Image (cartoon, rainbow, N blue to C red; front, side, top):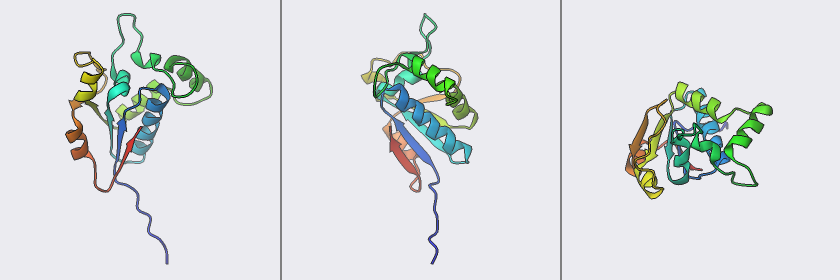
Length: 148
């Protein structure tokens, strides 16, 4: 008797952690799933909202200042080290997600809790300001929901 393989029909990711490496890996998972034809929704909240902010007056992207979950360093030095090792950079993954049609949501509550409610967000993709109900309604009963 052969077991039938059943793949999830959608990937829904709650991107919660405000650490560069965790947000980077959420983008890895999202772009990979989208590349094989799975619909993907990224729901950014709390510390991960930093990844969606536009550069400040100094021209620096806020994601570059995000700390790592383990060890020392920031997004900027880690992203550079990844590039030197042939690992996709934050911007490469972001652009892949945009090109592959990943849906981007940001939690209104998360923005409010972090004091970012009025902050301008990236304008290179539509980022829907929404809530948990929208995210849950968007998820599939035959999909996977992960929290990073």
